[in-house]
Length: 419
Image (cartoon, rainbow, N blue to C red; front, side, top):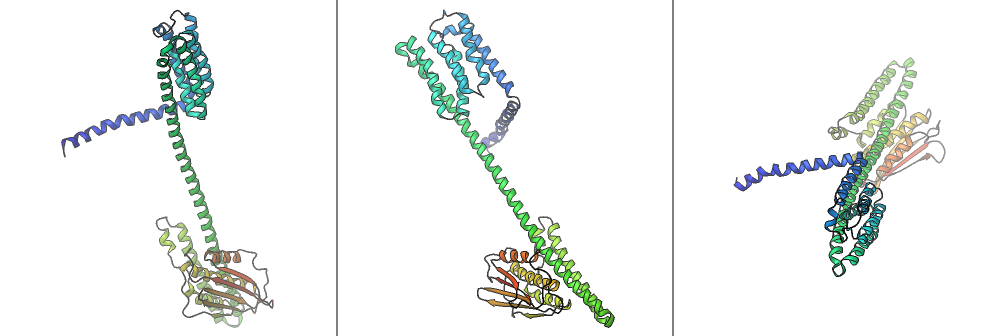
């Protein structure tokens, strides 16, 4: 390590500590001013008033063109130039106009009071808070008294009195504009950050609403289907108990199996909800129903008492996992509706037809509905699932009025897997 490096490291804390102290001091002063602005205004006004009166005690004669002016006039002008400063932040233009009148009397009488430079304070606040065009009028007000005194008392050397003062006023105005630009830039950054935060909150709420809708669909499909199967098994077991105890026992076994499957699916779904954020992706990767699970699904429905004919291609067409889940849930919900509404003696048929542009799934039944389908969440949920993968779903009675049909068309190569 060189000597210069050591000296730099040794002196760095000494140069940064005062800077931090200064920043803390400025922050505290701003906070105090925001809480009690009248306190700072009063202190500043009294301070400059005392300074003006001290100058009026005799110091003004050092630059005056007419030192014989009465003391009462000098005191009155000094107060007129200093006391209005109390309102400089609320009404800077009015304060500048009032002090300009006093400055005009000071210049025209030959007093040339140094307190006239207090006009820099309202000028600063005009540049800080008022439209830029106000500065033009402000410079007119500032220049008029200076030109009056210079032309009356200085003659050929009038510029020596006017130009330095106008330069000072210009520097003050530019300082106000700079502070205003920085303040507006900071306010813009804060506003932008606020808008981004609001947008993020809205995105979070929309994502939460979409997730709630997805979970509601999953819960509806899982619970609705399995309860319908269990109900069908229980009804069949009750009728079979008297004539064939073996079939009743089979029905009870099927009820147990279906119940356990429903519980497993619910645990998987609830596990995703209760998992920490870091574990959520792994929980979301838990096995979901696919096209391969259609055959066990159909077998479970047959066990519940609904004859189902199946026409499934072999091998099953490739689809993203989310699209496969959509097909599975649509078939599941359609057969559940058949169990609930088609009545006794109904049969169902499930057909999957693979085409180059998509997969067509048709679920039909031959029973007579005992309720008006589509009034609950089932068909709505199926349409929402299909829309997620640019698919379409149609449902309605068969042409002869003896059953119901659900048709799902889903592209075999969706743009993205949105599950």
